[in-house]
Picture 1 (cartoon, one colour):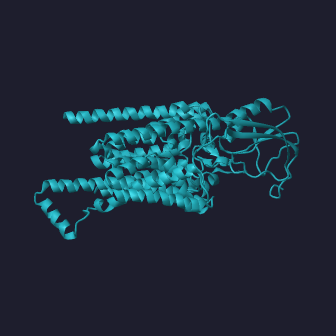
Picture 2: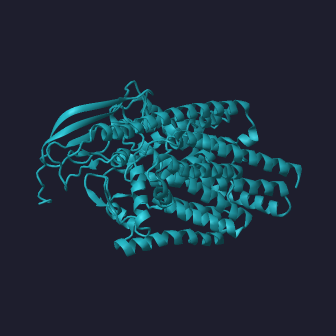
Picture 3: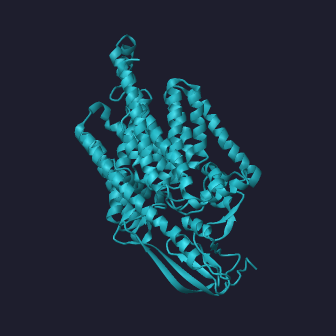
Length: 582
């Protein structure tokens, strides 16, 4: 091996170690984070798997106000629940062991991003830093499915691309199987199927796509289980039974807001375009951001300065990345810009007749365009799925697009060729600001999630009395903590509280409808106030990290310090049975 090869391998090993360290820095501080938002659904399915491994959706839960089958309420397949089920059986619902298990996905995401950086950006560290220090990733130190999906998608891409490039069937098979696991983590993982197939086709290795059948077979086993247990495929059920009325435009603007708030690369792409005098791109970025802001105002009404900032920077980044990606299509298909068909033919003949440099330059240009096109379509496909097929938009739905967006943005900056000091300085400043905001938002989200765990423990200690049952309303992480504390979940229909029982109703979680005829008298109120001037879930300030509705932002800087208000009521009269219950 040459000295250059040794240097390259040593640099790659350093990049990989750095990626692992960054992943641990992101995950370890939040190992004790209380269960939050959809963690409860993942854990309920894991609990069911410990009892009936082949029937993960055969149980029921109350998520929207009444006890119903999990099959009809969850919108994702159960791989993460299977992964966590042995730990749930061994440790119960304990945060630290389960979060330690989820660290594996953070490390996998970092390592896969490093491998993809080696392949697409000459091993630059920027993709790893911007991906792992994104607010979307740092805040999502939960036991939900989104970081696992991003990790499995990136690992599948790294393995399959390595198999295509090196002609190794073992890597092709491994990449296909990991793709199958991604599809069993969230249905949006299906985006990887056409993306990986496209890469093989663009590399003129179309026969390698046959290996993708292995990943599809994994998904086929899940579909067969659905048919045998429930009589229909879960994905088909979701498509035929939509649960929300949002239009695609209701998810488009939140998507741009999320990209702007979670990936701070728009200033770098804009500055690079200006430096290289690509005025058409500068104008397009400015126009794209302006149109996004104008469209947001027309669609949502008056918007906050935070919304305006994130929607314009998000639109600018997407525009700056997508346009060059689309421009790569003709070159990737073998054309040469700026030449007539006759001149292209003459150039091809000259290359074939011994014009080596020209031919090498043409091949290099085509390879460059092919890689750019693959990354662009991977990112665009992921964003398109979240816009057109998810029930509502949320930061977690966009996390799998962060890696290809960062890789493509860094690739288009061409840092490996220019070695620009001022661009390095700008990227350093941007990633530092992004990391500071990411950890601040993550700390605020931790503080918010802790209110539910804390009050559940307080309620068990101070409200429970012999002969008096303590009920509660609400889902999200609060439901998991309240059930662990021995409280009883109140449903719209079913068993009713007795006079003298207590009912706890938090202000901000989704609660579902109140049972008909239930008369309550408020006897106590507990308000939790935060120390960090950032909110992640507060409709009063427009913050909505886990469900970014039109006009809202993932996190809001605010002077409002109220995190949650718990109201305790005494039942003065039991609810009248509803007609359905009679």
